[in-house]
Image 1 (cartoon, rainbow, N blue to C red):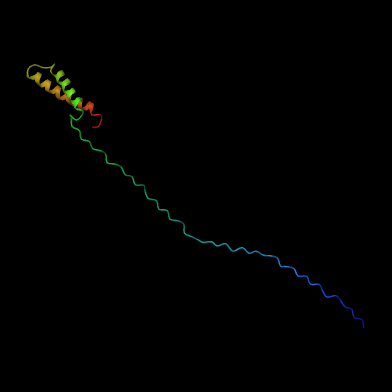
Image 2 (image 1 turned 90 degrees about the horizontal axis):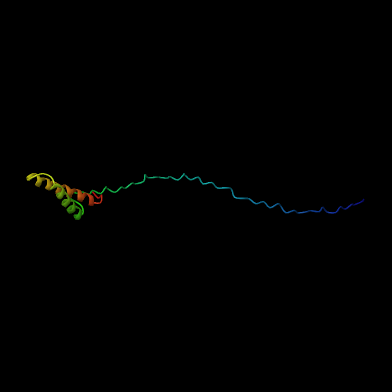
Length: 106
């Protein structure tokens, strides 16, 4: 009888490949933001009310206008008419002189 011995089989151990697992993506569903826009508030200042009389203005303008108006008015009429024309010229000159020196405020 012949006995043949075979050498034992050679066992080679290989390392398993390294597998990297990434975590699964997580999706969080959020409602869209609510944007509330308000109309802009418009605030306007009330117009300034300036009440001016016919003789409002610089005193020099009123008095100068009265003097010139009285001088011009005295050139017209006779007797009581001359007095009325002088008075009308004085009043008209005072109003015109006051309006000229007011500066556009009224």
